[in-house]
Image 1 (cartoon, one colour):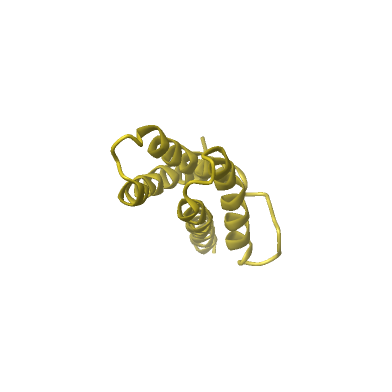
Image 2 (image 1 turned 90 degrees about the horizontal axis):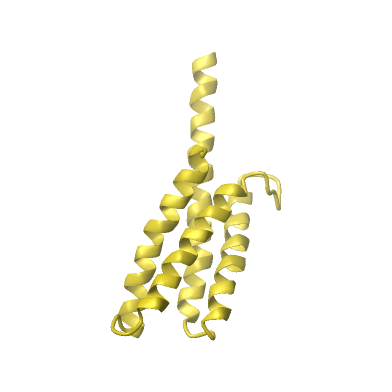
Length: 122
C-alpha cells in the first residue's frame, strides 16, 4: 500500500469520527448505531477512492485537487445519502467538504515531498 492510499484511508477514518459526532448530536446516538457506522464507513470508502484517484485530472493546475476531491466526495457521499432515504443532507454536504479536505491534504503532502527530493538532488 502506498503512502497516499494509507494516509487518505486514515484521514477518511478520522473524518468519519467527526461525522459520527455531528450526526449523533443532530439525530441522536441512541438507536442510530447502524446509521452512524454507515456514515463512518462511507468516509473510509471516500478516503480509499481519493487515495486511488491520483491520476484523475479534471483541470490542469493546483486547483485540480479541490475539484477532484469535491467531485469524488459528491459521488461517494451521494451513494450513502440515497441509501439512507435522504435523511441527513448536512451529512451529505459534509462528505463533499471532506472529499476536498482529504484530496487537498494528501496532494499537498505529495507535492511537498517531491519538492524536498528535488532540493536534495540539486
